[in-house]
Image (cartoon, rainbow over all chains, first blue to last red; front, side, top):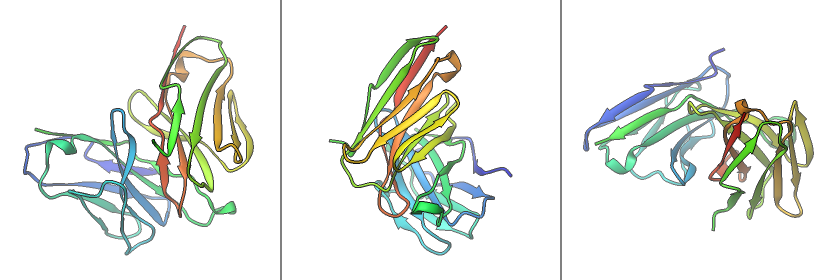
Length: 116
Length: 108
């Protein structure tokens, strides 16, 4: 199993350009998440998808859109990139229904994005 | 005030020392997650616990639900333990609220 994969690993954009970050998991997980990590801020949730066909805003959704294409894939789109979106982006997934009602999240390797 | 706070922010230790990283939270949680982020950036899950104590190798995690506090202990620390350690509270549904992380450096 590859676990959670993300592409690309690195990306440099100019202000105003658009791009899509891809994420896929092969663990048959229901829930998927997009986070950004900035120095001194910790990880912050951008969007999440509790199941195929549903998406919800997290803590910092402005400037982003997401698509839960199918159970495996959850993409994050920046329509018009801004320097404030320079960050490291992590995708994660988890499976609902474990004993005790809580679950481990599995993280992808991250995408480093620089917006000039 | 952050909902999840960790201390210390930075910790330097000598190889072999016993290490403690603390996490306090102000929200209601169903469980608490300890994560390790390697220098290369990858994040792995260490523990998820909702009560008591868990042990894996040289790592021990404890949680006191009444006091809203968790600790991560590393016994016989080694330079390869150098990483950022992050605690995260599992709140509503399956959402995690993260602390800022503790940068641990273990010197040989």
